[in-house]
Image (cartoon, rainbow, N blue to C red; front, side, top):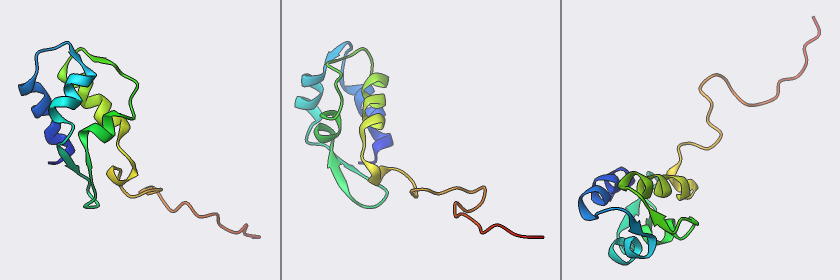
Length: 92
């Protein structure tokens, strides 16, 4: 499952507020696929969070997005405004 699909999963599946343990008991086994092709589980991602209760599906989704590893981010150090390399000083 793509991480963006978890938002709908959390919306449809629970009545909130919800205990974090209940979320991981129900969906901890669900695999999330990163753009790199790597996978992880909802339980692994939410284990990185110190949240114990979720007030809404958006809270669970925010916790997911805040705690994924670097395989879920775009190109590291990418900057479309120019390169990030130092340039030698020019003497004009």
